[in-house]
Image (cartoon, rainbow, N blue to C red):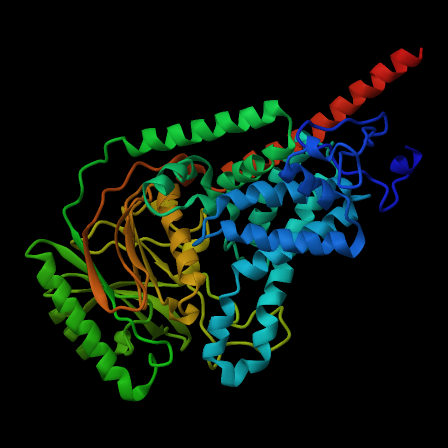
Length: 560
């Protein structure tokens, strides 16, 4: 018993699985160790409970490697696999490692290893983008993904560190969930910001089931879904009351989604959207000998889409940098596009030079016979792909020269014949609460992207999932044109209306869905998940202290 209280590594016993935790007056666990293969009564615990108990008994490097493996296992819950039950194993085991840590720093280290494994698997596809420029960046191939995973793992390490200050059991579960999301909010802004694979995305199953479970994002965003996900994943190591509460939460969650999906939508605006997918390999996009061939392919697909759309109003959408020509300086190319679009407005991805000679990744709005009626410049540029961050010492930049310059921020284009549109270029769609100008709220979002960099990996599927949930959060339809796929259309509740899969040229023609009134998250933004997560964290930390204080008071009364 004295050895348990010593506080040295190897001295803290694992949690008592399934029934909560007991604590002494100083906050240490005074209950006996749960049965393990070396104890009698092995059959009294279920297989998952024995697994968690064995994990909790690990120390040093073995505990760190276990955390790494658990993170790798947890990554299977992310898109496009959606193996959600793995979280019911990986997160309880992570909590057992945090509980068994002799102090916050060891808990942080174990959390870091968990995060390293999670991001190592979840972001493996980044290697695909580097291989396209392997002749220049061959040396970076084995470094890129581990380096990024190690950086992002710091945020999970911080969450584990914070959770270690809470009392064992449900207070620590609350603390971990709240700290996890506060760390996610931080990584949305620190450095260049990279909120990819937020844990709430595990609910974005294809089809109606996914539609149901992503609806609360309209209230609390994907960050709020992450809070709930972590709490539900930890219920197996909590008492039966908390497991029952988790079941009630899940049922209420599903009921909310079903009710929201059955609410009637407003009338549609009566406009067809023609999404063009050229399917041009990244290695061919800027081959000078193929420029005319690529342009003619897009013109032909556009004309086919217009013919399928019929005689009613329509708008044509080309993907990111689909035009191989500088449209701002090429009236002939603009005229050809307008002719192929049969005079309908066209939203075209292309590069441009601004008046100061800076290169920008832009969307052009063409009307009439090729008149530029507006443009939007991408403002959230891809680090190392489109620009070189000043804080990084090594020169890694795929775009040659001085790279791209960012635009001013989210904006709304007002084009004659179209409802106001909020453009998103490429991975701007992964940033919750930063996708539209709420002061000039659009009626729909258009996301143009070039995912050819990622090959046939999980990258394009994860990117699509991020775009889908932005529609729910904002209450706006999102129409997406991708060079090599996945091109898709979502209504304002994230329901998929149409899609064109990867690696095929083609066209999607879909009526533009109506917009919903601004959701609570659209009105108040990231303040909602921040306050939610901060409240959950504060509750976990403060309630544990109160319970410990009551325990101390009872002990003093007993001694007197």
